[in-house]
Image (cartoon, rainbow, N blue to C red; front, side):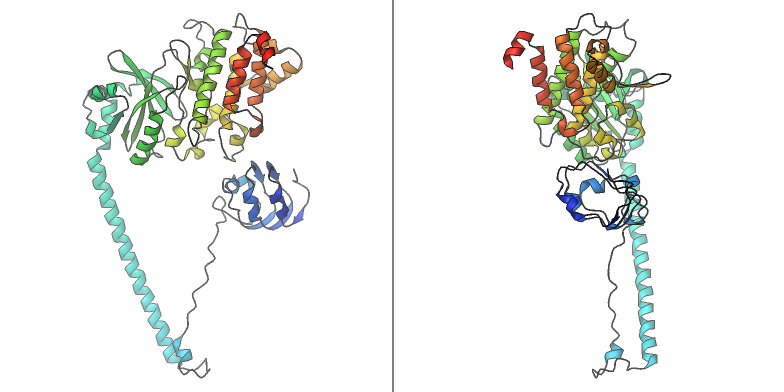
Length: 490
């Protein structure tokens, strides 16, 4: 850090040659001039703080500078950016107006011509300008009126209120004309009328089974003996284009893996978007680890927890490696790991960022604060230069939760327990088994210790230091092999 050093002069252009630079903190100095445009090419830069200097001009074009928090730029009166109160003004030169009266004879007498002629000409221009302005105002008013009439007519045709009431009422009056219902499997298509006729069960308060960052989830039985999970997206103000929504959901509908919740279909109106997915009978991993569910389920054994860790890693590997660009989850945590009848893990809520193009504005919103214990540092610092490594960080926290049974952050009366620091300190003291969940009856140390270390590696503060999910799968498979065979492998 070079902050608080009374540095003056311009920012050296040579900094752009530090290709592996991660943090650039030049706050509280006396630096002046413009920020070198070349700094925008530092692709590894995660954190920038230029506050309280004397910088001027525009920000470089690199994505890190375009996504900076305003607090990283404040105190620079001369800086202009859409993120600051000081907006950038377009430097457009004034048009050159030549008075033909001043050059009428071609004899170099630039001041020739009568004053009355100049006055008449200027007055003529003023009247012309007034006429042009009035015409522009009339045209603008006409465009606004036509637009409002079109919007009003379109809303009347769409019957949004009727569509919403049909999904929440107790009388099956829904019609496929009120919204677009798409079911991916052919078997489901043959019963699509049942989905519409039973629409009243989709958003019934009694069938609500959970709430998350992206919406509320309901359990519904729309055909005999077939339960599904219905997610009502809360960001309907973001998802406005049906074509974009259709295209992205069709992609997600083709994603199939044993450790991923399969998407069965969706329902669309401009005011309401529903995702229809398979239902997981054994709830979420969060319920099994942190809720008082002893009367409902027995504690998870070490074998079951290891199975969940491995299956989750395989599901994430599929998302990261089987698609280009990779499908990034952004929100890996126990409540998004669902368990089927055999306690196989199934990742839910994947790919929703593809449906919500403005997700970056919600990453650190109040809805996302509940997941802060799982948020990678590159997300928390608002750089928003995101890749699949942020999922690996959340996975590392999840692994530590599986072994310890603790939440990522626990608040006591006098202190706060940070799970990563807690596990690391016990390993350094040579007492790793002290952090193991006491509800587990048997857990072999030769498996527990490397799993804990794997979780810590996945939560490295530097994204490039974290393994890929494919590497995580390989490591877990090696850990599960008998110790003697494991030694032979290495």
